[in-house]
Image: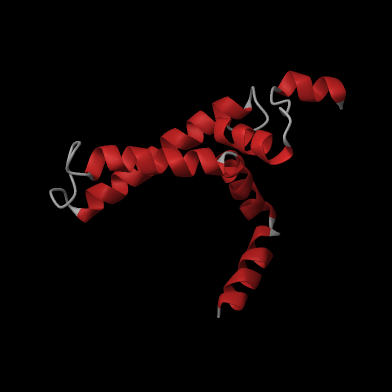
Length: 114
């Protein structure tokens, strides 16, 4: 069944309309590690009892609305960030640790060497 879903998504994203949707969400995908960690931190600050403590006190639909609002903010921030840098801040640190050398991460550095 999972293979069927995967094949369906491949066929779906081959169409031009769905390709445009995928392009819209690609900035968050390019900074996925940063978005994942930031998402976790923000939800801890909102829902855990030692901060705002909203877990169990708001309706589930409000939790979903908070998640969508956070994702929209991350989408806007990722788009703005990637207009200047090649990848997110945590992705930069990850590449530095993986390759053992500081990567060039500004767009202007990348364009000058391409």
